[in-house]
Amino acid sequence: MQEKLKEYARLIVEVGLNIQKGQDLVIACPVDCAYFARLCATAAYELGCREVIMNWNDDYITREKYLKASPEVFDHISPWVKALLNENAKAGSAFLHIRATDPENFKGVDPDRLLRNSKASVEIAEYRERAMSNFFPWCIVSIPIPSWAKKVFPEMSEGEAMEALWQKIFDAVRVADGGDAVSAWQEHLSKIKNRSARLNELHFKALHYTNSIGTDLTVELPENHIWMGGSEFDHKGVEFVANMPTEEVFTAPLKTGVNGTIVASMPLVNNGNVIEGFSMELKDGKIVSVKAEKGEEYLRKAIEVDEGAAYLGEVALVPYDSPIRLANVLFYNTLFDENASCHFAFGNAYPCIEGGQDMSKEQLIEAGLNQSLTHVDFMVGTSDLSIVGIKYDGTKVSVFESGMFVL
Ligand code: ZN
Ligand code: ZN
Image (cartoon, rainbow, N blue to C red; front, side, top):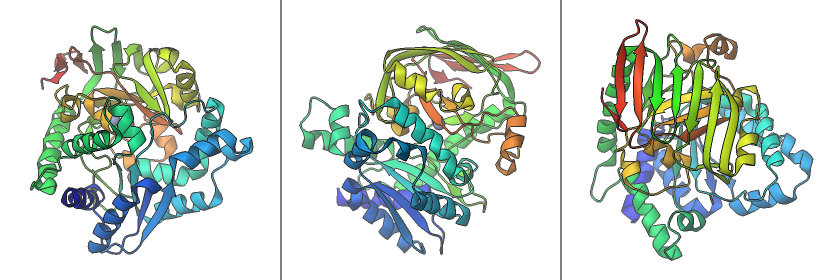
């Protein structure tokens, strides 16, 4: 176990963040996972990291804050957090996010407080915009904690559930006994690169999604959109992997070019609340109505964060035989669940267009990309999902059949 943990930490720092000599690293981590942050810090220093800066958090205290703190607290970000994020972003520090949280940590929290807190993130725009445009390397990973493990495996004892979730995570991130995770990732990343290259060659005008649960949606793409996936490059040209695991190829939709019905194929865990059995109607890009069997109020608030929150910002393709889907569990964690299925996100678009990384917010809007303070992935892929690509001359090309890539 100790060896696998070390290998996972090494993989994150070497391939995920690709830490450079003299670079600072900011690690956000729950206090319960300190042992794993320590391994990551050691691995980073071994690669020549200048300083590891810790940004600790805790589910219990965060929940207490949302339940009991003064309401005005939620309209602002603490000055020190603002400085930590904005200043390190400007300096090009690496950011590691170790996510481990009870999926229902915010159950019963006033959705208005969550909404106000999301709106307050305008105060860390410097950080958010530089993250979205890959100015600095960043990586999101997860490790189990008991409350999360028990949610995924409710029938097991706490100890068994922790062990089972660790195993699922190691499988998902390709850390195996005596294996070489770094070279396994290099092979995996080149497979994803080939897939996005094929999509870029085809240069679709739109994609048409249909399946038996009721999704029937046409998604137009900006004219100079680019499909991306696997690894990305920061402003210095250093390659990094923003999410581990990652199975998707993705691009941005044309903000005002999405029409039809989307039926979610998996529950969405957003801001510590579970939203289940939901669907939405879109007209000229805008989500004009939503329905959910559970958590509808949280879904409504989530698309009200700002104007852009009610428009799509990501189109991501994941085959139905992805290792995360084959794991056959609901992780209640977007980092994993989004890699089990084709998905969209509402909210901000990554600058997936030619020259997008160097464009201002205004230029991105001009190019048809959505801008928002929020970005929430939700799953739509099913075993019978069909996606047809429509080219500028009207030619149709099958992209997905029965949930699988056919390109
Ligand atoms: Zn995604
Ligand atoms: Zn996303």
